[in-house]
Length: 350
Image (cartoon, rainbow, N blue to C red; front, side):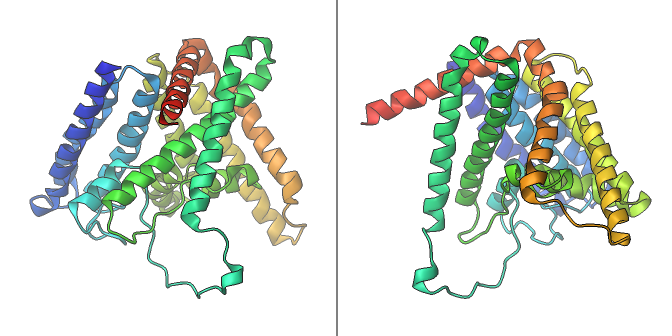
């Protein structure tokens, strides 16, 4: 643990320094090849930095934040596009804003006109309170799932993998929420952030799940970096497939950071399959709409079908690489240790 703290402190010092260098690039480099070449050393640094961590959780989180999202943002920045561009729709107004947007999985939302005031009776609980309660509920559910893991050998394998699906969602949701809280501390007061998840369990289709509900920070960066330029050149279907293929490639890289084993291609095929299915789904919807045939499925039917397909293909293609590599045991062990540490801290606080 001591080595991990040293690595974490080192990363917390190196990342702002590297992004400070990127922040001043517009003063002496122009958009295009020169800025891209100037950014490449930071891209390499962000690819190597997660390898300094020994625990899977810190290695995976830092790889996701830096090696994927921050790298894509910097590459867009070198081309004068994306959330870091001085000419973008919401340009960073200070280095702290630049640092928060670059290093964290957040997206600054455009300012909206103030809503009409509600009558007192129509108001519910304050939003911060609801957010805190939701975070606590997810934390307790995650702790319950982790408490089941010591008995997982006696459970059906499909049930265990289903628990892993819920574990992955809850962990990612809570990590991104914590990152958003850190981002708000760096951003100017009153800055609004876009949501990172939008109740993915209510998805009515693959398009709804991947495009509007699941891990929206990844959806947004892929939309800007891959889908939009490919769509402009070759059409929306090709844009969808390109975005999923790039997502599959990046997930293979993320799995390398998690397992430290060579990629197997299974995760890449998972995203290629979902890209093809989503492209077919969009084409079918357009075909039906042109002929006035039917409407969307009822959510009570569509949501279980969508989530069922996601879970089934995830069990088939997404999790085997984790389970075969031995990373499964390490993730479970680290999760149990973290929950035990938190419970112990809570007991001492009482």
